[in-house]
Length: 148
Image 1 (cartoon, helix red, strand yellow):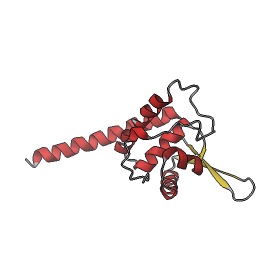
Image 2: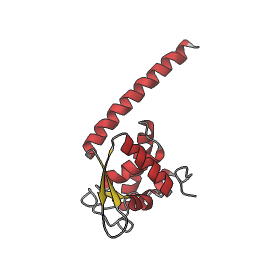
Image 3: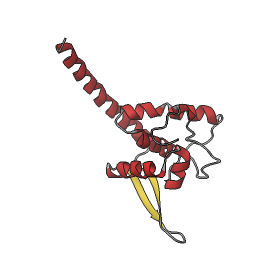
Image 4: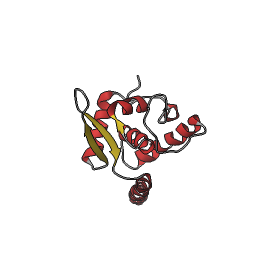
């Protein structure tokens, strides 16, 4: 089963798939798609350490590649279940990380998601969050040393 709790190794993810997602990516050209996906998968543990859950991390990575994506695009790219994608999008939106645009074609309106920040701003925010986590670990180490 390929849900959020999937046991697949993170390098098996395909965040960049031109055949699955016809949207225009932010990157100009990708010489080796497999290496590019491996590099992107290395962001997962960093985002997890920074305080995001796995679903939120996968969505952030996909939105770093593609400027705007719909929920169905995110389903295909992340390999998550629809309920997990929806829950992660709601959480990211609640915390102010997403811009949500509503489009109307024939039938039901659809939502298009994008990150509120540029990739450079995301990296700066990640550095700040990781620094906070390092400070938390330092405090924990001090407490553990006192208990010995």
